Image (cartoon, rainbow, N blue to C red; front, side, top):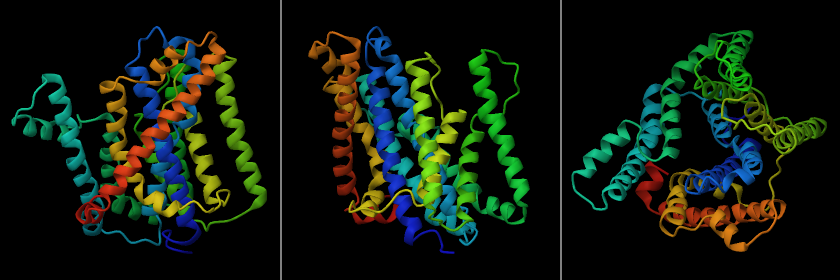
Length: 358
């Protein structure tokens, strides 16, 4: 068994990392547009927007699965000094270097001026988790990194059935139960904290790590079919059945879709083509950190969104509007991706950032 950092494993992880980053950008392009758009416009396209969200909500779970796959690998030794000095420090520096300017920008926009006192205030906001919303993932992964050495010791002595039982309890309590409460509009079903599902994704990565990459063409067909059927079912539930509850990271369909997508990559369904996946994967963290800058510039300063462009197109029917809106969302996503990727490439050319942060 390899160490999980090279060969076929590394290839499929890079592909998943890039795809998940693209999905995150699309999700923020969509949610950012709805946040700044007149609410009267959005209802006509609600089922379409929810369908798109359903199909990209797996992005953050995939990141957690990748982290669990790499860091919980039994063959990889990670002591607390190594974890803190190499990995926790990297995330902490990213939180400070990007979180503080983002928090400060909110203060500047709110007061329409810059004051020196805003810097310590922005630092306080960042340390308490009140910077730009996408930074929440860094606080989460920092916590998971901190408990990883202890978790690896627990997994080393815990029997397989014990791990499976723990994951089953988390899935039922943090995913199935909250979803049923939402669907049935009740609060009577006991639940575990929603955040427990992030721990579940991390543990799922461990289960893939303890097994060799296994290319099975027959299994590839079933995994691909399962992903397609689940995705189609989610779309049809919106467009035909009128299901209006927005998917969350902890809801069962999101959990299943994320695990199936990761399984497809792990099983060899994702091939290495001529696309430089490794180079693109190396940029993914920086792209994640900077892409909201361009979303905010477009929406809040240039004041152009997919919806404003759609209004100017003078589309007469909802069906035609949905088609145009999909194309506009894709176009905005590509623009933001291109700008964020170029910025990430430049930032990684700075030796100190590349070595310690990106």
